[in-house]
Image (tube, rainbow, N blue to C red):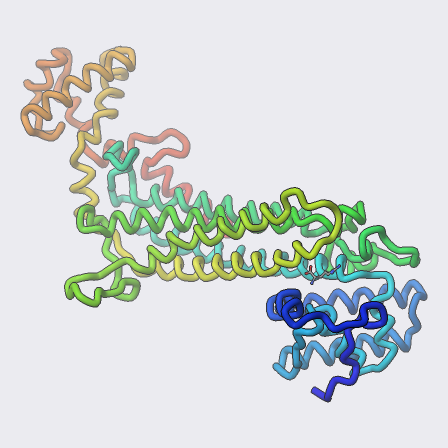
Length: 463
Ligand code: ARG
């Protein structure tokens, strides 16, 4: 880059002294918002094209500015651009360089706009692009969960409530629960597009502009759906930032929950899954160890994303309208949340390919804890015309008996069962079969094998 002759602050006519070095250091956001350079340039090009169309600037000036901006874009992409802290942010860094490249006519680029509308335009475009990236990663994860589920329709495991054996379920059904969560995440991110598709460009500093601009034109050029309605709200609004941060938080919470479950299942107490060596680490002192560090990393990261959401909520609390420097931190917060989530999604996809259910152990654990007790109660209701509450009590008495005799429910003889309920016949014994138990839950959304197969097929077709 040629030596910068135009190195005065934009406001140097008005503000005579150089900003103190300390303030320069904290006031500058270039190290963070330089990430928005493409969006900034695209926005500026649409802006000057509109200014030309509206006869606010000449064809020649428009072309010169577009040429300069494109040159700057390739300089930045090729690491040939020298960012300067003194120029605060991406907007001023680019404008300053434009002066160097095309001369004084660069001064026309900022007609009828402000950095206040410029930054939100850049930011909304950036969030939209990244929403797509997240959406694609979520699709990959869903696809890989479906694959794993398909292989495990008949893998039986205990379903838990309070981490106590509750009822037997298919491992595929459990996995499909996470498909639902990740699908909701996709919807959540996509629902945010409604406000992200409102174009802020043209509201200028806070009150609009006296130039005869065409906001519908930039709206179309930049892929928005409509212009925002109120200039003051537009420059003050960061709801779209909160929406994104919230969506990231919820998605990372889902990853955190499944990670925690996998950690528990991988523990020596449960041993329900085996993690491949690719996703465990050893200990510096205990030679036998294989620790699920990667899952712990995923579990922990939701703490970071929640923190970011709360940082932004706190910055906005009580902030009067319209623009204040406080808002400048929104970029750092979103970039951190976005990068954290993208990382977690990629890692989680690795996890999915690197663990196996321990089917034998799953079945063993599902065979304990009187897990078919509810099936027995249901049997009483269906076959002996009892109310559910009576059936519940009768079953509880049978569980007590089994516990006393140190037996599982299926180890009780028909004679023992008849002691509690004389009307019982041998037919009842089928309810203690775990396959029957799982397959009997045929109500829509339940864990029956057929339900799961249909659901997997449905989701596979959707893609
Ligand atoms: N870099 C600034 C930000 O991100 C752009 C807006 C500056 N506007 C202003 N009035 N100082 O918030």
